[in-house]
Length: 125
Image (cartoon, rainbow, N blue to C red):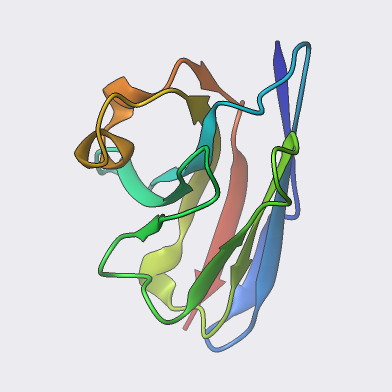
């Protein structure tokens, strides 16, 4: 299994970026997919995820209304459209795939079996 992330970069506050993750090695039709991030010097934190059925889509409070997660039905690709970026969005963004047992588990690292290598997002003021 391999998760390939792309789309990171360095931008100024207010700009947009789109991250994409493509999972390969097996079918992930019955797996949830999403994103975590790790700001510099901080713990890894949940960003967004989608239930394997396609709904619901979960967002952290810090990105709700600015980020949009997309996934075509049962596909192995997930995207994260990030608008109105802020310096506090800076970090390494990780694509995740897994089968969380409950909706609450979608917010937790333990809900995911597969992790990408991460892509850097840097937002300057």
